[in-house]
Length: 167
Image (cartoon, rainbow, N blue to C red; front, side, top):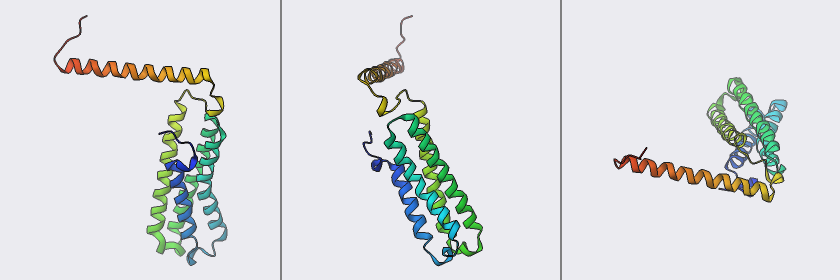
């Protein structure tokens, strides 16, 4: 699926949910006096979706990768802060919610990592760098890969039917 807008990205949506849920839990009385901790946790949580959005809008794969790694770092920061909250005596009654939030942050981190890995192995430099020639080269490579995959599939089917290819 081709995403036209960052709002369509499942990882952006999950990151938004992470921030919303962080904001909700930190409104509870146990968190109220933890000003700096809560501020840092909220900013880190919101940073995940914001950096995904900013990278997506930049127009180059290199910029997107940079912002994805920043977003992933923010997801790690959220998890670290939540680990502290798990151990803090004032927030013991929120252990289950904190555990769920850590899982959501971990899920965002895994999605970002998978996307970044796929981008690093891509020949596409990004929307900003697309020209008619680069689109044509990309399309040619994609069609060639599809062709050779089909040849391999037919070859396997032929062999599975007990046939041998001549040498």
